[in-house]
Image 1: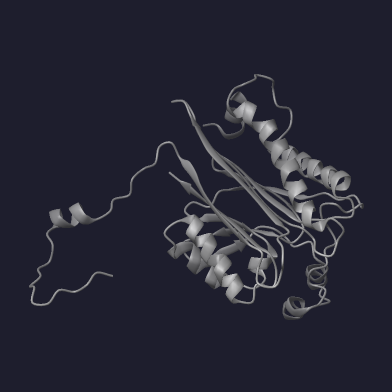
Image 2: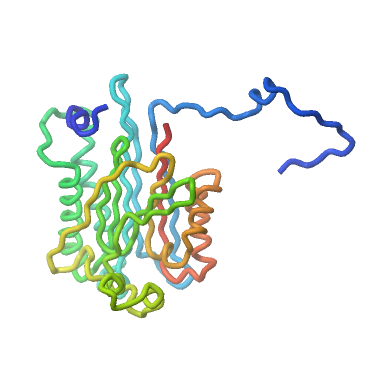
Length: 296
C-alpha cells in the first residue's frame, strides 16, 4: 500500500380539472434529489460491442476491471480498461486482439494488485508509466509468438485514484467527455493518413474518405521496434473517460457521442446506444466502446 501512498498521497400524464399551486420551500426540498457524497469514491464502468453490419465476425476485444480499496485510512478506486481492434486482412488478425488484451491485462493486474491489496511489501522501482509500457511489451511479444503475422491496435487506461494513465498503439482512441459539451481526443492515431495530415500533405476531409485511412504505421504485432504513447492525466471530474475502436469514432459524430453519454440512464446503456448509432450509420466495421465515470 505504501507504493500507492507515495504515488497519490491520500413525462407524466396530465390530469384535467386539478388546480395546482406553487410548492413551498419545504415541499421543494422533499422532492428534489440532493447530491449525495459517495464514500469511498468509486469507478463506474459500462461497455458494449458489436460485429457491425458488414462484418461476419468480431475482431475487437475489450476488457474492463474496476474495484475499490478502503480501509479507513485510504480510499482508492482502481480501474483498468482496454480496447483492441484486430487488423483485418492479416494472418491471425482475428485472434491477435484477444491475445494482446489477455497478455497486457494479466501483466498489469499481476503487477499492481498485490501492491494495492498489501499482499507484499516489496518496493516498486517502476513508475506507473513504465509498468504500462512493459504491459504493451508483453502484449507485443504475445502476438508475435501466438499470432504471428497478426496485428492489433491497443488503447488502455489505468485509473488509480484520480489519475488516468493511457497507453496507446494504433487508431483506437481515448476521449475525455465533459458535461459542458467538450470532447477531447487524448490519443493520436498512428495511421498513414493522420501522419500525412500532420505533414500538411492531406486535408482532414480527404483523410476521412481515403482508401488508406485504415493503414497503420504502428501496431501491436509489427516486427519493427516502436514505443507506445504513454501519458498521465487527472480524471475529468465531472466527466467521463471513453475508449473505442474506429468502428465507432469513424462513423458517429462527436455531438452524437456526447448526447448518448450524457442522456442515458447508465453507462452500459450509453455504450449500447453508441453501438446502435454506429450500426445505423452503416456499421462498416466492428464496434467497441467502454465508458468510465468517477463517482464521489
